[in-house]
Amino acid sequence: MADPTRPFKIMAAGGIAGAISRTCTAPVDRLKMLLQIQDGATALTLRGGMQKMAAEGTIKAYFRGNGVNVVKIAPETALRLTLNDRIKAVVAKNHMERITPWERMACGGLAGASAQAIIYPMELVRTRLAVSSQGQYKGMADCIRNVLKYEGFRAFYRGLTPSLLGIIPFAGVDIAAFEIFKENLLIRYHGDPPPLAILGAGMMSSSIAQFASYPLALVRTRLQAQGANGAKLRYTGMTDVLRKTVQADGFKGLYRVSSILISSSCGKQAAHVSGATSAAYAL
Image (cartoon, rainbow, N blue to C red):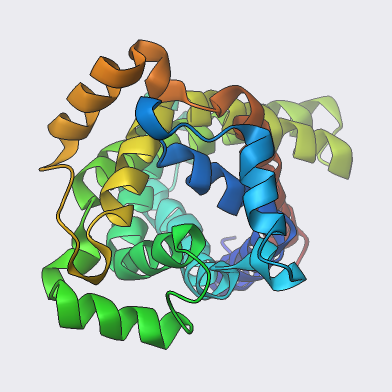
């Protein structure tokens, strides 16, 4: 018999796990964005990025933008997991054991894109706070005021297209792969897989998903970061970012710092997805 409280369990577990995991990985997340906005002419190394954060002089520098990240990731994660659960129920028509991997991927992608679109303005604010120079913004409210004043409301949706195009393969592959791994673990361990096995499944699924969608994440970050305080836009859109990135750095430029930073994203994604899912089943 279906548990009527399951959606609320998933929302609560997803929100809490998402907020905790993002806080734990906030310094690496900021470092990732600092490196993503660099091009061939102004390249910043991994060491340079770490020195840039350290030069700001306080521990808060490593967590800049994390408050917005927590505010946005809790509802985003909760929405994504809840919508995925609901969409699967509609697609499977109460025969969950018959749902195919492709259907799982489609459900996960649609749920991820929907959640991302709803909270997207907070995504731009987080990026601006993370890549801005020290003292440029006083906080989340000040950043929102500045964007409205100098760039207008439409600026909050800058980079939405690559974000949605990226979240579909990312969320689709991530959720579908994770659920396939999880089901195999449930069978192997007779319905009670160890937490480390669930964590490993989350890391494996996130590795595949992150690699598939990484170039679009880089494009999104560069579009979000440009135009602060009314500065001239460097890119006209998604295709312009792709073209200029390849011209400046070659195809490998689309995967800038991915080999180092995808691993941290895997841990982050594994923590809140596997944590949320296992908690939801345990509650």
